[in-house]
Image (tube, rainbow, N blue to C red; front, side):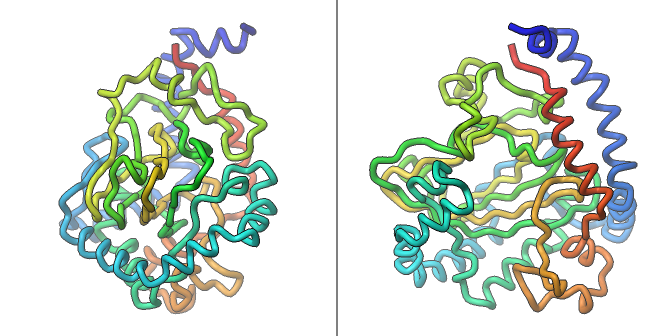
Length: 348
């Protein structure tokens, strides 16, 4: 074991990161790196003092199983998806799609060798897509993300994804334990559109918050030469540190959902054995995170092109939909992502 690894595994180093570096950096991240978003957060709270939101209670995840609004929206999406399932599956199983995935992810990429997932969002009726965007940008959802992140968020991604079982396939890619190593703090929202059980792949995530887990890593990781599996942890390796009692297996009916900080909470996707799975996902992030800006060159929001930078007068929604990365923050973001990986501590 080299000196660097021994240091990262040491009790002293781990506690310096957890109890000294992390709190100081958190302040720097909120008040300096995200100064504009922090100001907007305070203005938002003043303007929406009585606004209801989902309270994560200082945790990094919140599982919700019985929200009527979630169930109503998920039913609309499911019913609308049924019209497009056969066509979408045909595309997913086509050689043309596989070759496209190889160009995007590489010849041995986990989404290219045996493609198993594809976007459904673009297939949905336009009115429903608009309703999904409206739901994602509602005051309650914004307040939930803002109160967790302690800054005003950017809505960087809206997805409705179809996963299907494939013959001669096994666990791969995001089905292994991992964090999304694209930033310091975020909030993802995952909602089941189809009912989910062991046959179509439950979502798994740690139940309890771990101090400074944005900088937590494991001794043994999946090989880095496999595209899509950088930093992933085998299930057998993960179980050495976290028993089943510490893990949430998310099964449930359509409308079951979780808010999850995917930058700090270890999680893994499900493996479809015999049935399809449809999931809705929103990503709320900060401008220093790594993501593709969710608007076109003509400043149209890509998930609802009727929303443009010129017709959005609300300063909060303008930031939510159209916050543009400066050249400086692009450089800072690239530096920070490398920095996070270099200072991580290793579980023992």
